Every structure is written in C-alpha cells, then in structure tokens.
Image 1 (cartoon, one colour):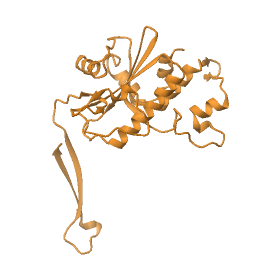
Image 2: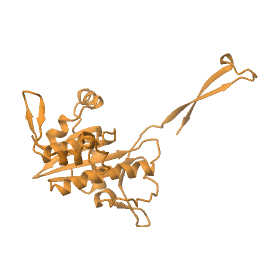
Image 3: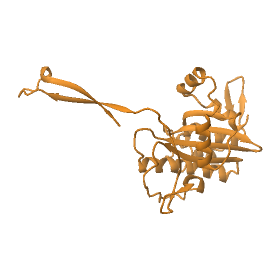
Image 4: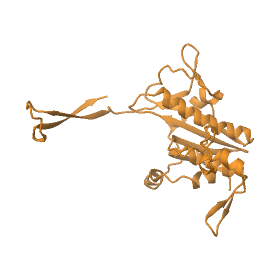
Length: 246
C-alpha cells in the first residue's frame, strides 16, 4: 500500500463519511478556496486525484507515516497490518506501547485528540504532498493552542526528514481575519513551511488565507438569574436567551 491508502484507511471520523456520502464530490476543491490556498502555501493543487478530509487526527497521520516507513503489509486473513519493528523503534514512535516507559514528548503518536481541521493529500511525480489547514470561524486565535499544534506538526516533519520519506508538508491558517500578532519563539525550531509568511514588521508568522462568510453570524447566550426574592429558590429562577450579532 502507498501512503495515501494508509491515510484513507486510518480515517475513522463519522463526519467524513457523512459528508462524503452526502455531497456530490468531496474531493474537488471550490475554485475560490483552491486559489486562496495555493497562494497561501505557494504550490499548485491538482483539480482531481486529491484526498480531502476534515478533523483528521494527527495520530492517524502519524500512524500512516509510520506504516509507510515500515512498508507495512496488510494481512487479509487477520484484517490487520503486519509491522516488523524493534521495541526501541516502537517506543520512540508510539510511547503508549512502551513497556513501563514514560511518554516521550518527541514521539509522533501521543494518544490525544489533536487534529487538522482540513487535510489535503495528493501525489505528484514521486512525492506525496500533505496540506494541513488550521481554521477558525467566530472564535479568536489562541497563541498557546496554535503553537502547540505547530510543535506537533514539527515532530511529524522531523520524523519524515529523519527517515528520508518522499513526503512534503504544508501548513496554513484559514479564518475571516488574519491571526493576531503572536510570538512564535518556542523550544522548537520550526521548519520554514510553518512560518511561511510575515507580519507588516517582517516578523515571521504562519501562512493565512481568508475564509469567506456571506451571511451574518449570531450567537445565543443563556442568562440565568433570580427574581427579587431573598430565598432564591428554584421557583424564583428565570432563564433568558440573548441573541446578538458577532
């Protein structure tokens, strides 16, 4: 199996299969989205032959890269992959499998629910191209959360580089407004594709392209309180909803 098949087989997200069965073609990007994405990351994306998934777990991707690295074969009789690996290699990649060992912060698989909001994968010539998109709609960008996600992607990148895999990673943010001015100085040395753009003062930032929302957005906020009663019993409780434009 090739890397793209590993990535497909490891996707167990219900919403992906709901969307795949509900829309006419989930693996064709809309023109405006495709143009904005291409400008953000600096490559052209094929119109056909791509794989698109939403909320794809980074542990799924880590496992796919590991299976590809180990040239894992599918045992059709048992319905599982056969991977021949040393305990040392297994512990460094999947710390949860370690025999009594502690979690290795540099392992590519963490057992957590971290995901990429959108993942786009395709093969061109001999290379696999994996585009990871981090999106925000109404909520604000969180510096700590974004840097953590970039650190996890850096670990995947280092695994690809250390094992000389024919895989290229790309990363961009996607939201109605560009992310605020953040300091991306961390313990990690981020690869250039994670900081592929600049703020106005020339400091580095992740790439970004605009999410278009053609209708106003509103949020409903529950407001609980008590009537003017000293007892504050449940009979005096009132509940209102405030709906306002964001």
